[in-house]
Length: 86
Image (cartoon, rainbow, N blue to C red; front, side, top):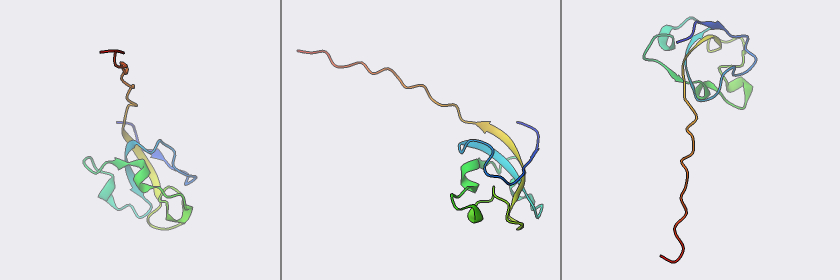
């Protein structure tokens, strides 16, 4: 698990599939404790005012985050074509 990182409010700083703990402007502890991890993308919206990652000066702005785990990208398994004429 990483250390807490201050967030500047300029969009989502990690990949959508990273699991993070977050700290909100209002300091509500609901999502900064172990067991409350969520994918970073779950806090994001393409409309900035609806994204917790974009600062709007509200209590729901994410002001710090902590990466808990990043999901590895699975390698594609090789595909064996069927034998011709069998």
